Length: 522
Image 1 (tube, helix red, strand yellow):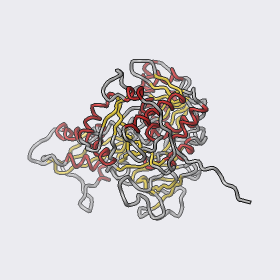
Image 2: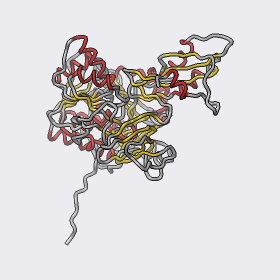
Image 3: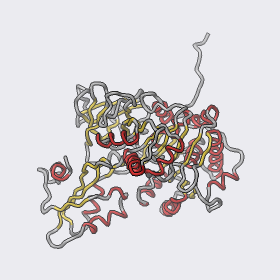
Image 4: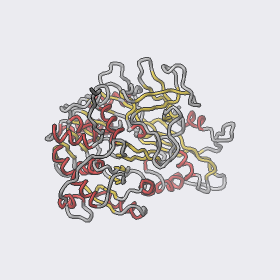
């Protein structure tokens, strides 16, 4: 007599698309296009095309563990590339096209990706990255309007035969790589495994989290290069839900057309996207009657903005909190919570845990009601950054997020600030030290400081405070111009404030606390 045994079933991401193809094969993935009708494909057909991508990659020498970078917008072709990469055990390294060429080349150099798959409009940037990255052998182009252009992946798919089998590797095999500067300012790579992303997907599907159903049509306005589009490319096929991808355009007119044309029920993205949609509806008198819920994340949501989105779209706004290091979901406010509020990020679902500590990392004796430094651990939380030997966690496995937070009596998380000086604008992190270093190179600058100021649209925006030398003058444009080639465009401060004397703390360092009080609206 034996005790019995359960089947081995590796938790690999290819199973989500396999499941969708078999049980929801006609459910559509829809891609919005600027000057044409949306592109449509069912999950069954998308799976076959994704397997052809795998065959092309295998033919080009890509194997298990190899990194393949993508520089692309949310589209069917990008989704096919994702599954084609991870299905053979390779690693999908997503790149944010809003970063500078130098930043992107550095990331590709670190990952040692051999191939880069790029949207056609981003192909020139991709080729410039390749020219700066010796390990990058080839650029493949997707979403070409004209078939047969050089390095066109679509043409290669037409010639692909005998699609390769997926799976057959351990569930701890790396599946994704995404760089973030969210905790220190310096880009760091977070490696997602098949197991971690699989479990993260199951967490997303819980009713008090995203709660997707097969009857939903979900609009993924959060980019696929932004922490795996919050897991939607895996969650939608897992649930058999229709998935709408907007392509490059996220303006209000384009989103309204997609929402109404495809009868979208749930839309996911940062609050500034939905503000643009509201402004478009206010200007045109249009409505979005099928839309029931909007999920927001990234920057903290101002009460007035939440109210405007809910009234303007006729929806319930669902707040959340997360980080790239968390795959990215940390907590979600239940969509029907009667006590929901814009400052409340909800409770963590099973599989993730929160801890508040003091500045030295000692757990607070009372975890409810007191403000502390937020730490996290769980099945989809980073343990070690890509290429680093030291762990990113403490001795007990807790990852320090860099956020200050409270947990209320019901267990809901409230982010109260940042432990460091990083500025979060539109859901993206800005590192003041990098801006200050560039500005301080100007010969007329004595001291420079960058602080965040509350902004009704972006959450926060940077402003530059400078003390210039007495001998000479320098224009605002001369101070900001060097930044345009060295940092991402949204990092450039909105305003320059000049002081005769920069306030200094007792240590001799710039007193940023005083600057925030005087000029940051604190």
